[in-house]
Length: 241
Image (cartoon, helix red, strand yellow):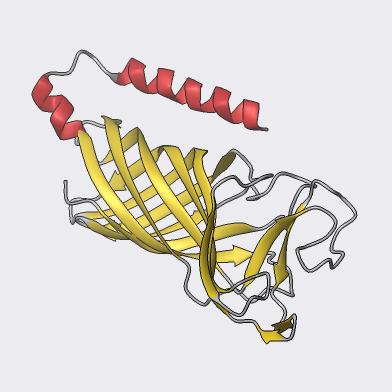
């Protein structure tokens, strides 16, 4: 599946290049657009034992290069690049192996990742999670089609493929060893996070602002090596340039 996606992206890039007929510097500038988006991730298929936060904010920035498909330029094909950060806030921790740090069995696979809850008490001391999140950042290649009417309404139907460049967890709360002190910890080397993500997206807007939705088809974790969760992102897109 992933190999086929690479072939599709490469083919689209070559197709887009064939549309270009030695554009001038001025036309190149006009064909480029720069924008950013803010969104909320609805995390799907989260284990029932985990309590996600109501708001999982994320952000992305992107640049598009367009190729007109009609004389008036109402319909264009675009391809570009971007960076997007997704966050999963919850009251749980991420572990790997048969047992968590409290020696509780959670999986039969020693290499599998899982979420587990911090007990209310450990070693006779109360435990409290103030903040816990999983953050993943991708470099994306978006491509698709956009239609813009004479009234400045526009519709975009696209697809994007992304490569993971960072994945980490942050925890703030009671010391997991039960010392009674509060700690802040950041884990930078996470196992079993899939290196890629992909899915379709759409934007409906007016002038330089629009409402967006991205449906990620791929799971955050590799198959059979973690919970098969994925986000559906709803947000706003701004294209002032």
